[in-house]
Image 1 (cartoon, rainbow, N blue to C red):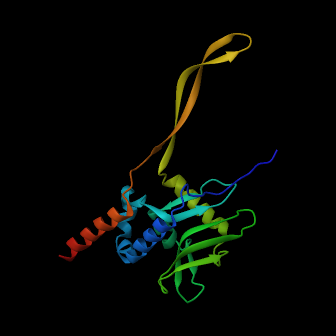
Image 2: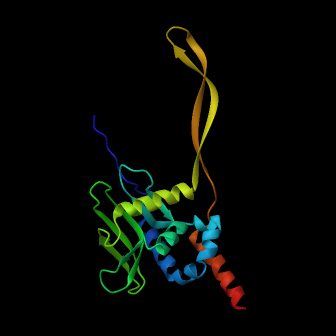
Image 3: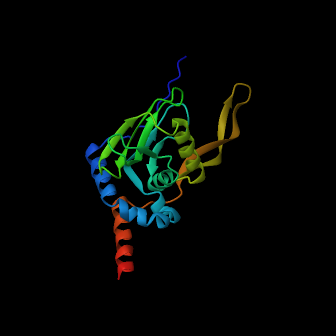
Length: 198
């Protein structure tokens, strides 16, 4: 018997949309940083999904899309940052993946100094397992989806008694929040910034 384990991969790969979202996000990075506390305190903002932000690894639970709140917390704790390979700047990591067994990994992000998208292999200062643990703990502490188990009455065949009543379980998922889109979040934060300027 062979067991296969694969990391997270988005169901649809729309490179154009990812690039547009990435550009929009980093054009407004200062606005997002100014309102970091508001984003971290509001569930609808915290779980804002970003098409370009994700993590992937096999064998261990916890990989998948990275919401805005996870990125902000990772950047603040410097777990999701890397030194820029081309300058003395800091790269804000938005995607990473690799193997928890070998430790080999890769990452992608945005350099605050170069103002360009950057890629790299193998984390420089932070072991890959530290990133896996950090994201896995965030998913447990701040879940976007919860699993719900419900009992229901059914029947089961038994060779001795034939059909007999049993209680079975069904498992479903439920979102804990309906997050705002990136475009709506940026519009709301811009409106708040404009009001505070007046």
